Length: 105
Figure 1 (cartoon, one colour):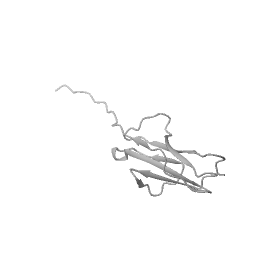
Figure 2 (cartoon, one colour):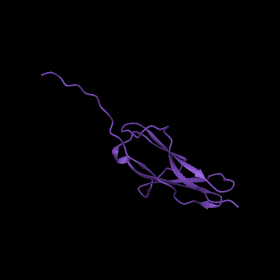
Figure 3 (cartoon, rainbow, N blue to C red):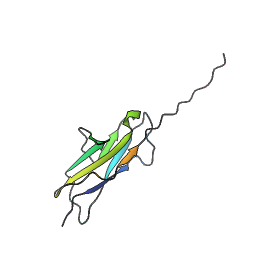
Figure 4 (tube, one colour):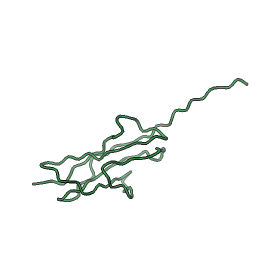
């Protein structure tokens, strides 16, 4: 018997924090009971809304902005069917540190 895939969102940016202006990647981690079937489709959500056009295993967010912060979930479909949206990952986008110096006036 083969089950639908269980999913969880994982940081795919090798422990890098989400910082404004940088890219950030999320991976849809898959686990199934029994032998996993080939995944046919992925679906991504941010704050409960589907992200249009994002259907791959990895979601790459280019040039992070504060608005990119939120709760991300993914689901995957294999031959037995579409799994449920699994464990989420909350993203808080950090402000990019900017150096400055005080000029003498």
